[in-house]
Structure formats: structure tokens, C-alpha cells
Image 1 (cartoon, rainbow, N blue to C red):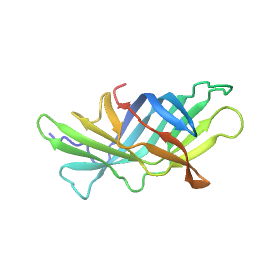
Image 2 (image 1 turned 45 degrees about the vertical axis):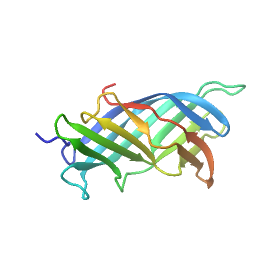
Image 3 (image 1 turned 30 degrees about the vertical axis):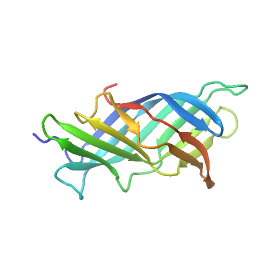
Amino acid sequence: MPLLPPIGAEIPCSRLAINTPLRINDSLVTVDFRGGIKHRVDVNPNDPVNSVRLRTVGHKVSAELPETEGKSGGTVTIEQNDIDVDAESTLRVTQQFPPRFELREVTNFTMTIDHGEGEPLILTTRNPMVLVAQLTQFPPRGDLYQLEKPVELVDLEDETKVVAVIEKFPVKVGGL
């Protein structure tokens, strides 16, 4: 029985990232992201026997912003930038029995911060977000993915200015 999912399969997974520290300008807030991601399985030409590439074909999570001194709450939404042309995410078999996998999920996205008044703030990733997970099955069922390093978000009009940083993204994926 093959351990890897079949080429061409589309795999939707729910996502829940509780207590995510998010720095916006100089304020640190903690938010709970909820949503999902969908991957399409592609051949990995670098290792077609033990791994597959996962092309992101849909990704959206959102969170409610807490109310702070004089500011109403609002929402933060993370959504896939564009079609994942260069699928960099990989799922690799690291052990046949019992099955073990390593997943490296690489995602570029846009973050929209909407306080409900005025224009929303729209940011994009300076470098892709990389999540890593050690799995015993795929699709995952409530497995925890960890952020490889903090994700810097920059203004679309000034990509040198870091406006927000996702410091950690402890996300449980699938089976929620």
C-alpha cells in the first residue's frame, strides 16, 4: 500500500492556530486563527519515490483582533497571494513502518488588517512562511505544525518596511 497520496489528489485541511503572537507596528496582540488550506499533490522531480510536492490551491485563515486602548477590534485575514506556481511544499516519507512523514509547507500570502474604520491595511510576506511537521499519517488529523522562523510582513508599496511579524504560528491541521 503506497504511503504517499496519489498525484492529482486535492486535500483540504482545517487549520486552528490558538494564541498566535502577532506584532503590528509596535503593539503585540495574541489572536486565534481559524480556517483551512487545500493542497494538490504533484510529482516531486527531485525525489519521486519517497516524496511529493504539495501545491497550495486555497488558503485562508482569519482571526478577531482584541480591542485595545481606544481602538476597536477588527479582523486579521491571511489569504494565499496567488496560484502556487512553484510548489515548494513537500511531503516526504522518513520511515516506512510505522509510517512517518516530514512535511515542509512553504506559503506566500497577503494579510489584511481591518479595524472596521478607514482603509484596511494590506501586507504581504517578505519571505515565504515555512511550517514544519513530523506526521504519522497524511492527511494530518489534528497534528501541530511549527513555524521555522518568524514571518515578516511588509507594505505592498514599501517592501523595505516591516509592518507586522508573526512570531509563532502553532497551528493544528486537519481533523478539527
